[in-house]
Length: 212
Image (cartoon, rainbow, N blue to C red):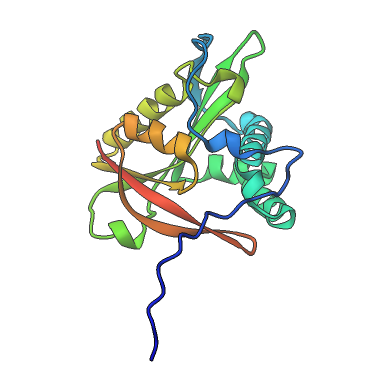
């Protein structure tokens, strides 16, 4: 006779990849110890000359934020695919994507970017009409707390509304608690989840939506 065994709590996986560049601290919620420094910045549509800066920022922020959870070979494969200069140039040229950059300093340095992508969806939201994706929102860590991400999001929301879209969606890693909190503060709510593949590494993303 089989006897039912008590349920045993399974701890979450402990990632130890790329410790020289990345730590779980990047995605954890932490109390603010001091008021962030406010920086002056401007926003504008990305141009082809911005591609190297966008590629560099995207690669660096992705690596330092998520590198601890991805094997080095899979991380490199994903970065080569998503954040090469050629890949960013293709996104800038594409008729279905729009990139907005935030710039600061006397050299007009790119310190953040957002990418709006049309004609994408996920099974959990396929019944929704007039949807568009906020595919990327990246900000240089030195400028966190300065309103860069919020400003970029408002910019792409305005573009989306102008194009007739009524709902914006995005994917955020289930372990990125900091980003989840930011998106919730912006009005996004969880609608489901999907698998996100990087090389041989498969992770789970929350799918979040917002009415425009």
